Length: 288
Ligand SMILES: NC(=O)c1ccc[n+]([C@@H]2O[C@H](COP(=O)([O-])OP(=O)(O)OC[C@H]3O[C@@H](n4cnc5c(N)ncnc54)[C@H](OP(=O)(O)O)[C@@H]3O)[C@@H](O)[C@H]2O)c1
Image (tube, rainbow, N blue to C red; front, side, top):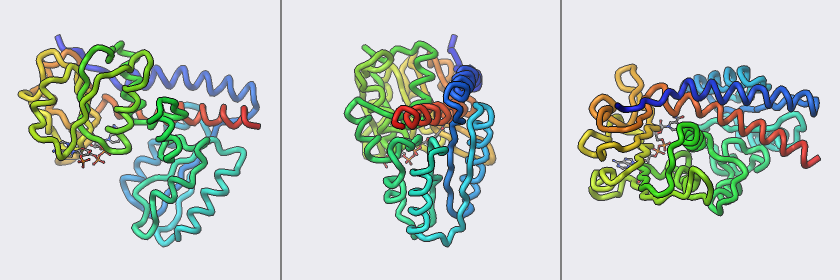
């Protein structure tokens, strides 16, 4: 019988304990953790996502502040805003919503975020720390997968994990997280990407398969091993419906454990952003 992981339940559980920790933090330090979100231009997907972040903040008792700039904002103006937020004592975490308007150098902006407030873990210093096995923050989506695996007692050590996708947001940091020398990590890994020849040759060998491709249902039934654990990070809109990178219906009875889309990894991601914001607030208290 395949176990279908309920990401909404896990997100709720994490949020309950997080909210209690946030409230203890507020009582102890008389500071409410605050997340500042910066966006430029009116990208509809970003607007929707920022609304979801605001809701997550509310659920976790974290303050939320939105800086919505017009699309003609210059890079210098954006850098100035980041500099002010970096210095602001009441701002614990900063995220810069992408995409930014084309005339703005996204990397330069992300590098400008103070690494201590970089709750999205986009600053190269934080990614470097993660690569060295000494992370300060974990990027929220692979962090959500890691947390889900811990909570469902999915032991990676001793198994063959195959990650499809090597983006800086999901696949690559996922690999780095699972390579850490710690419980629920110590993975033996294969990473596949668009230049991999014969993808199914690798996916069929996966005890644990993590799909982060962004191609609807690219992982078919004949590409997975009997009894595999399948984590689907993909979120693709097809005809107004959200579907994953895994052909869920046809793979379902072949897997031992599977995450659905929607309702799998997605709901946990924003809670991990809240967790990082509380950690950042704690860092600020310690550094004072
Ligand atoms: N659940 C969540 O909270 C959450 C958060 C973020 C993203 N996502 C979803 O996760 C998916 C991946 O996102 P992303 O930002 O990592 O996407 P991305 O930046 O487009 O990266 C996709 C990765 O998949 C690889 N790839 C593309 N086509 C492939 C193919 N035919 N065979 C094997 N590999 C292939 C690419 O290879 P190359 O490197 O060679 O180009 C790349 O490494 C998307 O559906 C996105 O919406 C979900």
